[in-house]
Image 1 (spheres, rainbow, N blue to C red):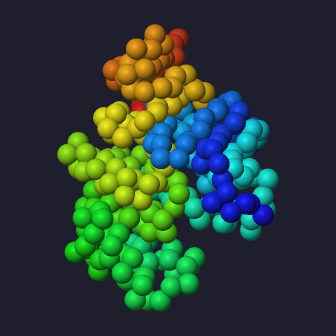
Image 2: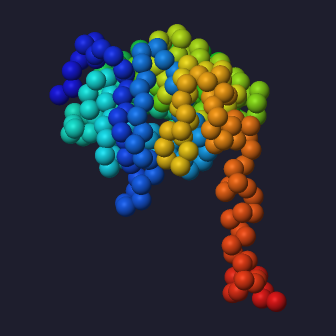
Length: 280
């Protein structure tokens, strides 16, 4: 059994020499980092660099090929599924697309974790749900369905649900993706307010550097499945690594420029027998 969280000293999350992937395909190679109490860490990098794969290892969905994941001082993958549950209940997750249940109202989406994992009366559940919705500025949305909300409102509800059980660690997967800059800035304010009010540590996965700059104490930058830089935003801005500078400046790398992946298809002549494209 994991120790009581009140006895945990040091990092809330510690990842050591993590190797992860799918089948025989390695996606993440030798990644190590920590999240300390009260700290907001951002994991950044281009799509496909391994950020979401790391998140899956942290929440018990993907067993690492090698390395260790320690949550609150306990190695997650050394535990049985049953013994992992108390640790994971102390972790909140904001899904990239919100992950709200479309058949339930906003109120019932938030109430569900409390009903499943806490022995509370309906009146207490209603009070907690109302408080969380007020915290994200959506008190009036309790009886709406997710389909009746805007994208930004769904993200706010997702944050409220992720923190409904007062987790010690909040994981946010691309919390501002698909949002315009003004709405994204509002989500940043919600995350910062929740973090500060509840003294929650946070690991955010993002490629939105404006959001990262506003929220993160420490930034981890990935490329090709490995960490290539880490530090503050200013530290990364001074990095001599061209991959870091290309990412910060939103410049395509030579191997990733538009059209580069198509060039080899036409080497030696036009393509043959491509469905829907007549041969000349």
